[in-house]
Amino acid sequence: MGIKNRYSTPAYPQGKGQTKVVNKVIVNGLKAKGKWVEELPHVLWTYRTTPRRSTGETPFSLTYGAEAVIPLEIGFPTLRTSLFTPDSNDELLEKSLDLIEERRENAIVQLAY
Image 1 (cartoon, rainbow, N blue to C red):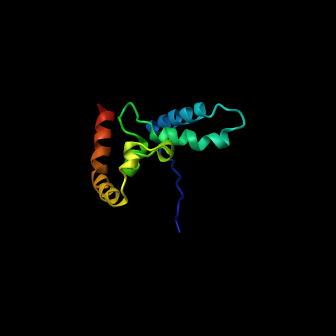
Image 2 (image 1 turned 120 degrees about the vertical axis):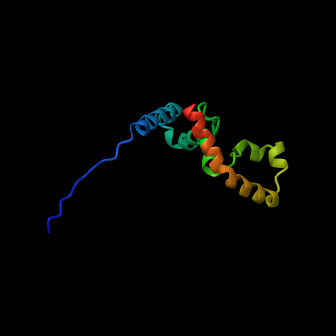
Image 3 (image 1 turned 90 degrees about the vertical axis):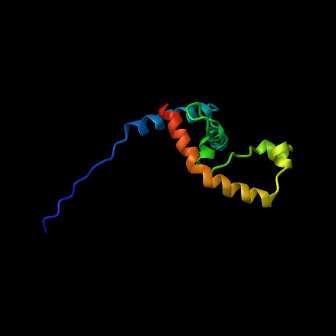
């Protein structure tokens, strides 16, 4: 049939470097010996909700179009949680999702700068 298999591995050197940086941050957050299973969700949450110096945005906000509410704010009333209403929240989320592409483009421009 004349079929030849050819294998290739796509390479993205910049992505590999970014992965190493993320992994280093996560490993540094898991310093407690034997407790990494309990600490991993907290370290990941911290990583995802901390603004990056290069973009000024959090990975969470670039993914979902809104800032995350930290667990402390749920148990301890803040202005943001006390003014929360489900009806207005749905409307604001729709607007945020409409603007998420613009936020992502701004982050890319900031990275390039």
